[in-house]
Length: 519
Image (cartoon, rainbow, N blue to C red):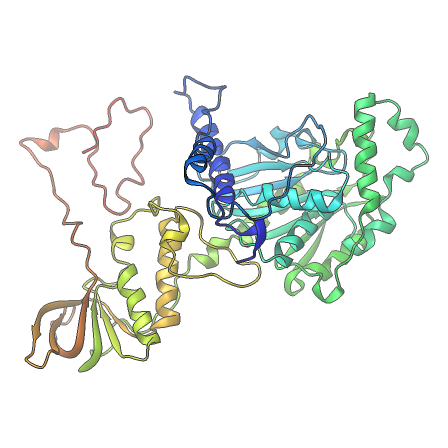
């Protein structure tokens, strides 16, 4: 869905996602005090391995799809750079900083930006877009790079100067081409940049009287890069119809009073691009003379406290997990037990609930029973907050998340997404057909081939019998009850003992321990 190279499930897209996460995790590990190797990344092996397998097996899924070639010129800076490693992986929040014109990862002072709260939980990356001379090629290739972020992290985009136009056009490109990505931004912060329809006419730093004199102070290499970037700026033409110009997220416009290239009135025009007019303009301070502007050193070098506070507030206000973590209503799970249905399903985990939705879809009646007080099965009661599917996302998908600006589940989908999907399947497919706290005591097969299912309510003790044409069991018998381990004088043991059920391990402190026994 989405077509072309934008299809998330081509092998190259998967490798892009996997490789970026590999090196992000590698940096987290190398940042630990006990790490002996601090400087050398552990090389990502799977792209080479995949290419070797292609030689034997032939093309993989998506290999025939169009994938933009790298046409970026010679530039001494990476497109995507991590400037702050969070304490844990995956991070709770991420801010992607789009560089201003002529800028690169050094445009953002790391010491200043790492003050973003919550401390140690914000993953910071820069996007450098210098080096291209063709606007379309640049947007295509930057989109490819940004689609490698696919870990479902709560993500905000912040863009300085013309970086805001680059970020805006990438979002429109994703939207128009129907690309899906788990890391679509939740909000967009624009700093000192006119709205797209005003940019071409008003943002022309290269027409300043002292432009050539200022440029001449730099090396021939820098002059070449700056001139190339200025040429790219000249080619930008806003082309989206007004009715289709808006983004699907809120916008916050940050303004420096007196900034000649981006007066406050030009930033106020960003209001027409925000979803449901969710727009605010924030005055962050006075404009400053910037002698290092051509070197890409703008306001991002020493961001005002108001800038940091606005980003922090945006992260918290629009945190996707405020809403996405709310489980949908699935009907009365303590409702009456029917006397007769076409199908009784025993077990309201991922497979039982999915089957119930399919049964209802086929026009038959069913009731899905579970002995526990809520649905979700193994994912709810055995998995912990770090549990993930041990296969690629497409191999464990129970919902197709379609539509514009949608976030599919991340690869090796975590517990929170799986539970959200289970509840949504019930809400949309078999609302009101689940009963919890119901123990199935016995199933009798009758001479006519039908069944009588004898059940007992675990809370009230009430017994019922359900007549059904079919009984389907979805119980996971591989996972038994926890096996408590005890021994004489075990209370004298000075260490920690915990079992791998649910979140028992989550709050265990592994730091400064000399021995860990697993099993």
